[in-house]
Length: 416
Ligand SMILES: Cc1ncc(COP(=O)(O)O)c(C=O)c1O
Image 1 (cartoon, helix red, strand yellow):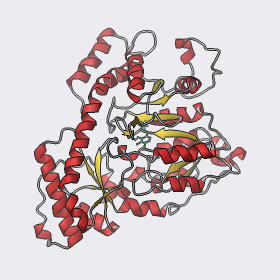
Image 2 (image 1 turned 60 degrees about the vertical axis):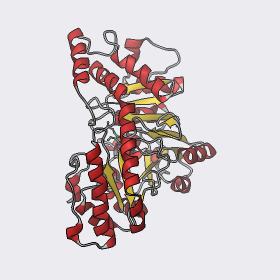
Image 3 (image 1 turned 135 degrees about the vertical axis):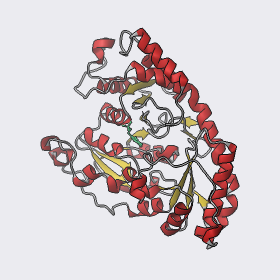
Image 4 (image 1 turned 90 degrees about the vertical axis):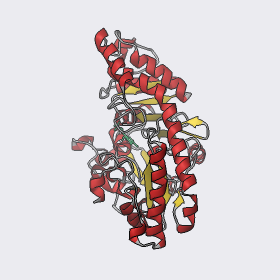
């Protein structure tokens, strides 16, 4: 959670006082948010859902993915990217990331096979995937592109907002995201028919509230409707997001500026795809080795990307075990239609990604960091780098007080 305050309390109280908590018929907060957020993203449609996982699942079925289809996803993402593919009956094919921490276009191209139908670039940690390269590969190979922008609220790629570039894009508004209403999510799309199918997947009964349309052939799906309480909080949060992202970009630039000379020691900023447009929720450094990254992060408490647990494919138990559904007959891994899809995984199938992640150190920014806190972060990075990378004596690493890491967000128990 970044910033939540009195304005959200007022907005929630107003909805409760009105007694208009349901999005259809009585309230207008969800409708208002969907219209405003679509305009902010520069897309025609935005549909709210109960979570980012639900949003991804809705986008998959809305775009027609299902049994017989392989969907290429990166080795470094929250496991919902993979499980949403399975929820549509399709098979996730996991490929490497590169030093940008996002899916490698070369790995996508190498993984395309006869069953490949789609690719999901994930704007991990709010950094941009190489969307020009990915869209070009997709066009050449007739692939659907679903952007997983769940971690990318407020960010973009070369002047376009995340989720506005592919055939659909999905967001999460859970507690950890740049814009939050506790739990929530949604799908952005430009195509009218896709947007209608997304709404049907999010609420198969939605025509009951909104009216039937000859354009949509309804289908059954799980419900994942948003409430007016979510819409009301998001309307407040949307007013704040541009300022927050601007503050995080300023902080990241100050930190990069203040640590530039450490490049000589081997503390190199990760080569991001669109640093002027992304969310800047972290500063990423690629260190020469996993050992150096580990020594650095012990001195200055920071996050090693490879130790962020659920974000790495090695932790996706259901996928690795082939447990794609609760009932065996609904398990995509057992479906005859998926017989030609690649369905076997191993813990070392994306070893190059693990090597990159283990030597990538993440230093979180925050819109409320003070000038003094940012100065201390710069100081601490320098002190830790001199000991970890240049062999300076340990007692020279005088680490100053800095904002603590969020142990839940970064799964620090896995780090121990
Ligand atoms: C990259 C990514 N995809 C999907 C999701 C799923 O979102 P939610 O937790 O709202 O279901 C998340 C959430 O953390 C995520 O980070």
